[in-house]
Amino acid sequence: MKKIVSSVVVLLLMLSVMVSSVSAESSRQSVFGDLSLSSQFYEAMYSLYLKEIYEVEYTNDDTLIHPLKNVTRGDAAYMLYHLLGLTYVDGKDFKDVPKTDEYFDAIETLASMGVIDGFTDGTFRPLDSLTRGQMAKIIASAFEFQIDANASIPYKDVTAAFTSFVHALSREGITKGVTATTFAPNRFISRQEMAAFMHRSYKKVPGSAYNEFEVLNTVNEATRKVRVVTTQGLEKNFPKLMASDISDDLKAITVEPYNSWAIENYKGIPCAACDVDIKVRDFDFGFDYSIKQVTDSTIIVDAIAPETYFYAGFRGTIELVRVGDVWKTKSLIKTSFDVAPLNLTIEEATDYLTFAIPVYWNEEVYSIKYTGNSVNGAAEFLVNGKIKYFFNLKTGLLERL
Image (cartoon, rainbow, N blue to C red; front, side):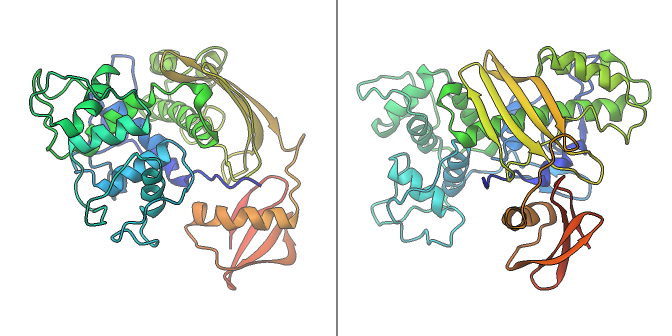
């Protein structure tokens, strides 16, 4: 059973916080309390948030992404490691990055690839703020942009150490500098600036080059965008729901036949709390899934959305198409568990729950045991010797006593 599990934190996307209309018909709002929808950095940060590359802070009233906070060298390694779907490769050891460090895997792997360097004293200094010059090097290296050692650039403040990397970013359209003649290579880079550089760079990656993790992240981002648009439309316009509420917003992220299906279901929703059918559910990639097709223009994935308290579970085939540099949802074909139940074994369920319980219930699993009991068709598991969880082997519904 594959172990890629997306975070349940995205369920909080329905809690929109900062209103900023993009057109008279639009229902879109910023999902962040500290970044306006009109910001030039919004789409980059929004994309990386939906991919779970950027973490946020949840307060009682807001979802904060801290756009102006400096990016540390450790942060940058972590972001690129996860954005590119890398897996750990043993690299150079830095004396200030122990194996217990949250950035260890990312730093070791990127160092082994030659993307990042340390200092002559054997340190990496993960907590130091990243400069724009350092950013240019790691972005150009991570995305394997062509490096011209003899390149010249119009920015008079860039030293020879970073000239070829800044040139690569300029040639690819990733940066235009701070002014026509300055790049500010020694200035620390903010989270919103780093997001913009990574977002623009990632758009250059062809779909056919995606690894497994990148495919799943792309599916997650596309489905979550649809969910946010439809939820915000409901919040703003219920009960007078019309196609014009969300049609322009949906066209930006969907194509036919999914676009028409989504709009018709949106108009037919009977109550603000009953928007089950319109929302594209997150697939749970902790269950078995199959990547059917990945090309520069098409992604097709078979996956599972388990039953929850509010939603019926299903097996689904989702298809995305790339229009320009945007992946859009084309179709979602569902098969109910009545027709094709999960029918997991106890061993498979135990394996899955070890990863699902920390994600959905924020409970680390140190021990897990099937008790042999069943309640309303759900198998009973004892976790950490004291907490009872009930898991339906046919539908994936997970409940805690």
